[in-house]
Amino acid sequence: MKVLIAVLGVLVVFGLALLISNDKRNIRYRPLAVMIGLQLILGYILLNTSLGEVMVKGIANTFEALLGYAGAGIEFVFGGLANEGAAPFFVNVLLPIVFISALIGILQYIKVLPFIVRYIGIVLSKVNGMGKLESYNAVASAILGQSEVFISVKKQIALIPKHRIYTLCASAMSTVSMSIVGAYMTMIEPRYVVTALVLNLFGGFIIASIVNPYEVPKDEDILEVQEEEKQSFFEMLGEYIMDGFKVAVIVAAMLLGFVALIAMVNGIFDSLFGISFQQLLGYLFAPFAVVMGVPFREAVDAGSIMATKLVSNEFVAMLDLANFTDLSARTVGIVSVFLVSFANFSSIGIIAGAVKGLNEKQGNVVARFGLKLLYGATLVSVLSATIAGLFL
Image 1 (tube, rainbow, N blue to C red):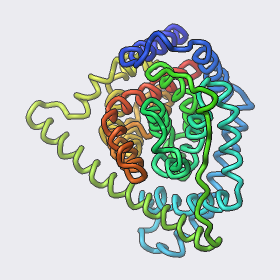
Image 2 (cartoon, rainbow, N blue to C red):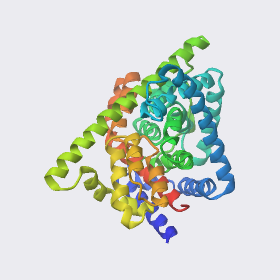
Image 3 (cartoon, one colour):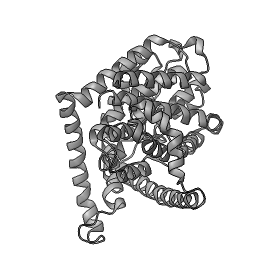
C-alpha cells in the first residue's frame, strides 16, 4: 500500500509541475529517472539502514557538540536571564546560529567550503543534466543561505537569461542554510532534517527540469565564482558573527509577528465560523498530505501544519507540529521532511530583494515569477516527503 501511495504522490507532483511547464516537449526524462532513483536509494539508506543511522547519528552528534560550544558563549552572556529549568526559544534555539555562522565563515576563509561546493557542483551537473552554475548554486545555497549565495555569482547575474535565473532561485528556496540546521535539530528529529536536505537537493533539480526545461550550450556553461573581498581573519570573523546574530534576530522577529497574527486570525475565524483558520487550511492541504503518505484520519492536522509553513515559515510550523502530540510517528516523519525548506511566501521577497541588490533588472524578473517559484519549491517539499513516506 505504501508503494502505491508513493507512486501516486510522485505522479501528482509531476502532473502539477507539468501544468506550469514552460516547454513540455523538451523535458529530458533520463536525468529525471536517474535523480528519482538516487532519491529512492538515498532515502532508503538514511531512513532504513544501519549505515544511514550511523551517518545521521554522526551528523547529529556533530551539531549537538557545536550547540554545546555555542551554549558556553550564550551562558556567559545570558546566564541567569531565564528561570531555573526554563528554556527560552531565542536563547536555546536561535542564538546558536551565531556560532554556526562564525564556523562557516572560518571554513570559507580557509577555502575548505569553496573547494567542496565547487567540485560537488561539477559532479552534480553530470547527474542532473543541467549547467555547472545551476549545480554549484544548489550546493552553495545549502551552505551560504538563500540570499547570500547570489553574492558568490554576482559577476554573472546580469548575464544570466531568465530561464536559468528561475532555476537558481528555485534551488535557493528549496534548500536551507547550514547555519540554521542545528536549530532545526532541536525542534524535529535530526534524521528527518538530514533526509530532507539530501532529498531536496535532487528534488529541486527534478521539479526545475519539468517546470523549466532547457539545455545549456557548452560555451555558455561557465562558472565564475566571486572571490570574497580580502579581509583579515578577525574582520571576517566579526562579519560572520554579526551576520549570524542578524539572522537570529530576524527569525525571532518573524516568529513573534507570525505567531501573534496566526493566533489573532484563528481567534477571529473561531468566533465567526466555529473553526480556526489553520483548520480551514488543513482541509485544503489534506489531499496533499494523503498522497505524501499521511494516514487519512490525520490528513487535516498534517495539512494544517503544512499550510502554516507556507503562509508563515518553517519555524512556526515546527513549533506547531510539537503541539500535535497525538500524531503517529509516520505522520510526524513525513511532515517533518516537508517542513525543512525555505518554501514560503516571505522567501519570495527575500530572494527577489537579494538579486535586486545585485542587479535591479534581474531582481524585477525574479519578483515577476515569484509565485511560480514558490509553487515549484513547494512541489519539491511534497516530493521529498513522499519519498520519505515510502520508508517510514
